[in-house]
Image 1 (cartoon, rainbow, N blue to C red):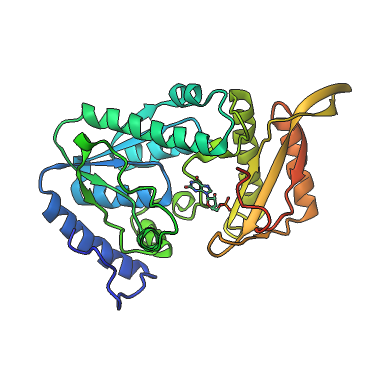
Image 2: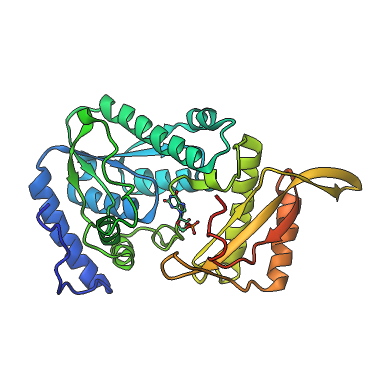
Length: 327
Ligand code: XMP
């Protein structure tokens, strides 16, 4: 792609008109670069890869091959949304890979957080590479790299998680159409491309997904408790005007139980921990002042609707001293 560096004087994309102009430019560039070759994209359903997918579908249609890997650690409804939006509505050339059993068996019994992250990352590359090898005529790899990723890897803040990773025989040329954009601009472009608000204004979600919120060694039943409680929290935040206001909010299920009482009987169940924080850059964070009545309602729903849970706790810890995630 010709535009590798964000020009110093580039106007911030804040309006649909500016977004359209950017989209048109990128479409021309991509068509010129790609010709009649195929482009491969790992489509997680996150903001960046979704915007890249929508943009490339406009530019080259079914020459874009999207691979959506369901690793079993996605939030409730996410794989379905990816299929609905991209396959059903945009007629994307989408390959859906159900890799749930593969990931969960690799993770079975593993409790160290960094080992869990490594397994999830490596397994992802393996599954993606297997799919790539089945395909013919792929010449390019599209990535949702954005400008802060470039800046942060230049300054050694984080190893850019999108960069590289694929084995030698799969070193395709990169297509990175949102590379020079800041996150807010990616959202404006995504909106202009017709992506649903639920996708464009999504809160950040870590690559290892619910895997780092199901603390310790992941089990299917506890993972289900994380997924179901998270869905309830998101629904209640959306219904009470907090969804677009709070920066990140989710639930955590630790790997211990406490005694409780349900239907007149003693039960040993897990607690669910709620985290809801505000921040500018995720380096520090403050805790959202959730109204007590709403906390009570969420507690009532989670303890009655989520199997295996008998308590709900609210994490009142800012960052520092607590990090945003629990592991
Ligand atoms: P912490 O927990 O370090 O999180 O305060 C800061 C932000 O980073 C996200 N996070 C991750 N994102 N892979 C990711 O892609 C990870 O392994 C990871 N760990 C934390 C976290 O959700 C928060 O937004």
